Image 1 (cartoon, protein in one colour):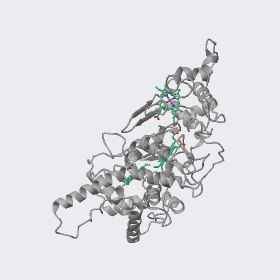
Image 2: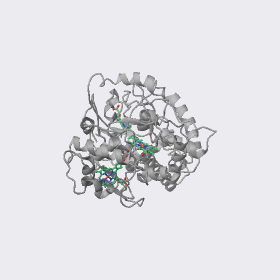
Image 3: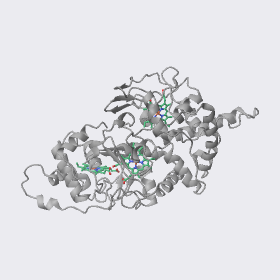
Image 4: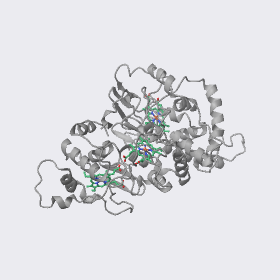
Amino acid sequence: MSAASSTNASAVLNAPAVPTASTPATAPSLSSMASAASSATAAASAASANGTVASAPAGPGGGADEAAASAALTDANSTDLVKRGEYLARVGDCIACHTADKSRPFAGGVPIGTPFGTLYTPNITPDPDTGIGRWTDADFLRAMQEGVGKAGQHLYPAFPYPEYTRVAERDLLAIRAYLNTVTPIRYTPPRNNLNFPFNQRWLMWFWKLFNFRQGRFVPDPKQSPQWNRGAYLVEGLAHCEECHTPRNLMQGLRSSDRFGGEKQAGWHAFNVTADKAGGIGNWSDDDIEHYLATGVAAGRANAAGPMADVVADSTQYLSPDDLRAIRIYLRSLPPVSGGQMHARDQWGRPADDVKRLRGARVTGVDGAQLFLANCASCHNWTGQGVGGTAPLAYPSLIHNSTVGSPDAGNLVMVILHGVNRQTKDADVLMPAFGGELNDDQIAALANYVTQRFGNPKATVTAGDIARLRKRAQ
Ligand code: HEC
Ligand code: HEC
Ligand code: HEC
């Protein structure tokens, strides 16, 4: 099992707890940036032609020239701008990485643990001393589009500016306008504690040279406005590739096999290309949209771990139009099979081990017995779950994409940490078993679950469990 082997040097680049990582080439001057940005604005409005949030009235400049514009109108415009910014900040999931403590939103301090030390996210509230209150809009744009901080320093690509660079200036300024309205919090996150040479920011210049291309999204005129909107979101603000696209040796995103799946921090962000066996080519349109809106594609997949957080903090808030646009774009991704011949969600059949175990004396660690004792109350002894496809059902493990994955890593992570996903529809909770079961027991249980309900080739050892336990959640 290789989930445990993703201890790459990327760590600095690549945030384990939250996804992350990459960067830009040479930083163009502000003026060239400005012109690139204005053409990108046109591009983005094309991309948002389906009338979703992004097509809301132009930003602060909206009617600035007309001195006659009433104060009320200006107020309405700025409220719209801030609302749009709030929505876009959800799409970009800023909160996931910049909120360590829910009572201090956007104040940063989230530790991003790496084998080379720890990186702490900055405070992006408008506090003038500890946050970004003194930043100009140009400073903000430069950070988002070029990965360069206020003092001109290169930022680590644990901050997903390799994607944010594609976002139109007007959308970034809306996010900035929204961030200006959040409560300023006086808080200085701990200093980064990175070992040499990873504490040398100039190295990021080198990394950017090879792995970062700064520039706005350019719509494809051959595609529909919905496709372009989906591409704009997925490749830009929503930064799905940070987790779902494989990386090169320098931990940059690989340009081949895009969305073909990647492992990070113990979790496998599955292949989401249109391949029927390797990806999600056999999902229905509704499955994809529903999964992003709620975390459940009934009878196929449940979002756990980092994807549960993406759904809870970000995609559940997307408008139906934007979810549809994302689905249209995902469906068009060139299929990557990854050598998989059998879809993750097409394995398994109901188990009947309960009959064998009835009255039998079990010696040693027995996966079937552990399953009956710990899992069957919710997932049924047959593995078929309880409640069918109803909302809040305990899902069937048969045809579940995590159980059918060729690698049992996510299954082990689910057993260790449970599932915890809060959305506006539901508080989904599966208990964590990491504290109750030892490595031998979890290995036996995971192997039983994949044998019966999933991909029988996905096996793990107690050593794999010990390695996965070390992963921060
Ligand atoms: C995957 C994690 C992640 C996400 C998502 C994320 N950031 Fe960050 N951000 C970081 C990290 C890490 C840094 C610090 C990088 C460094 O120190 O080099 C950072 C730095 C920044 C900075 C520079 C601040 C400073 O003091 O230098 C700004 C501004 C910023 N982020 C804004 C945002 C906004 C706006 C969003 C949402 C659209 C966002 N970030 C989403 C991880 C993230
Ligand atoms: C923080 C990393 C991360 C980000 C960002 C992320 N994903 Fe995921 N994604 C995952 C992980 C990990 C899984 C596997 C979850 C599981 O096993 O329950 C997953 C699963 C999925 C699945 C289900 C695949 C299956 O077969 O079960 C889809 C669809 C998906 N992601 C789409 C997206 C889209 C679209 C985006 C951008 C809006 C996105 N993801 C962003 C980590 C991420
Ligand atoms: C108290 C009820 C409960 C128990 C006990 C329980 N689960 Fe779960 N399980 C859930 C819930 C709830 C979900 C998530 C449903 C959702 O996403 O809507 C879930 C999801 C899962 C998933 C799918 C995760 C994914 O990423 O697709 C797997 C696999 C799983 N459980 C395995 C197990 C195993 C193995 C055990 C025993 C060690 C177990 N569960 C015990 C309630 C339970």
